[in-house]
Amino acid sequence: MDKLQQIGHLLITALVKARELNELDLDAEAKQKIEELMKIAKDNSQKIESLTKVTADNGKLDKATVDSALDRILAAMKGVNEELDTLLAKARK
Image 1 (cartoon, helix red, strand yellow):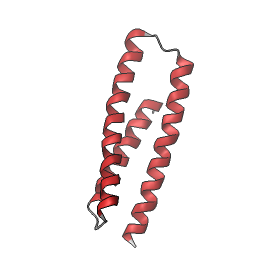
Image 2 (spheres, helix red, strand yellow):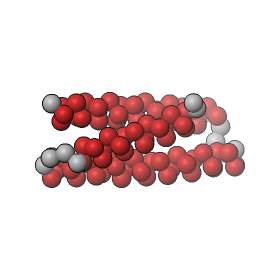
Image 3 (cartoon, rainbow, N blue to C red):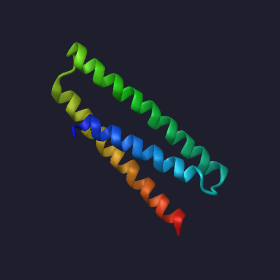
């Protein structure tokens, strides 16, 4: 699986986890933050799709720049998913 596919998978996974958290009995502030997270994840998903198309079409971004950015995005998405896992584990207790 290439980096873009991994990021896409992590985005979808984060959305599923955020929706599950949103269904729990949480205070209004927590629900608002979850909604913001879901919006950001959806926006990022669209941006990654655009990045894929732009990179393939115009070749203006060199491979090293794209790879470096994707590595950082991938690491961030892994962190988001770990945080969501932690929250879900605590919420299920």
